[in-house]
Length: 446
Ligand code: FAD
Image (spheres, rainbow, N blue to C red):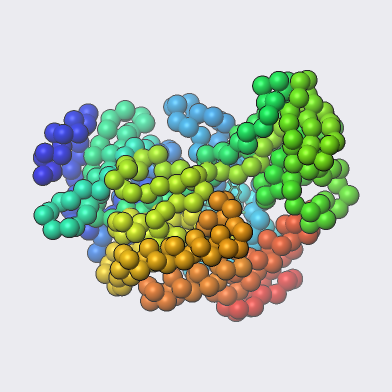
């Protein structure tokens, strides 16, 4: 069957190395999610072989700042949305993987360079580099039946960016860790063609200096929108932030950022009309309107679909119900990402190791429908298909209970929620706070 597949796919080159033997796990992406998965699947007592495919030339994912904005010098689409001067929006005391703390830096909210260094140290500590194939883009993932029983395996096609070679490998399980902050959502706003100013998305934002002396409109009041508005206001002539939260929810503490309503339409010249009837002129618009979930490499036989926000059918927002040997990590939002990614990696590792089994398919679908129903009743929109926020601890505990693994300490969600609240109530100075964890439930503000 392998030979037949090999001929059928007529790849330029086909590797059938160690990764085709039983127990091979593929991890797609070497960002924080992929590194967490790789750590467990390569641990000394792991019965698996693990192979990580990373399209970039180094690890770190989002945390690796790119000097390019669209495609890089090798023609690759730029993955990272990182910008200069970014400091984390979670304190390092809880942002870390659970048993791998950040070094004892004096500050709690560290610059992005320190997060990248942390990930490099993590990869060195667990000797992960040797199992990462860099410059290898996963171009197709497809389930196939190896034997006449119902065992599903995965056929993964990759392309090497340096040599242009194509490879096909076979795996027992696959962890999809390709990240969720690379495909910009750009709102369709009337009059875009007539507008003479500069329009961009925060995915391409790297630094504030191009906006020196300009009139800038930042759209969207998520963490990036707030951060970028504040940063650009230090050099711009003036900055307005367009959003639909209550203005009183965001405290710019006298900094020169004006808050305006949603855009109604763009107009000839540099004019912008807002839904409350006001008008203004801007040289540049920066859309900080978020990102879509996208899995262009998943063959339709994987049975995963998405409208860009909700991804289904997933059990516990991560396990492919149709093929439970595939997990998609990091989809849940308003969480503590590294802690969550570590927990999901342990959950998937335990599942693949046979330490527990998922509920049967009908029950998984029943749970999924119940969750979707609950969200609709709460008035949640498509973007909140995987939102947790205040529910995060419950979710963490549930995963832990099902997989018989340790949950995330309560102090993590407690301080995480407090920190997120302060982004809005104390935007200009929340990063000056310093924290110390006292135990698994309590923290102290120093
Ligand atoms: P990523 O970091 O995006 O990594 C995905 C990896 O997969 C990349 O290396 C990519 O090249 C690779 N990949 C993608 N497609 C393929 C393919 N087809 N083949 C091979 N490889 C592929 N989180 C925090 O905890 N604290 C913060 O302060 C914080 N600030 C943020 C600020 C910004 C501007 C952004 C965008 C995000 C921020 N986040 C923050 C969230 C951040 O996304 C997570 O911390 C974390 O990076 C998610 O890890 P990931 O591995 O899922 O995705």
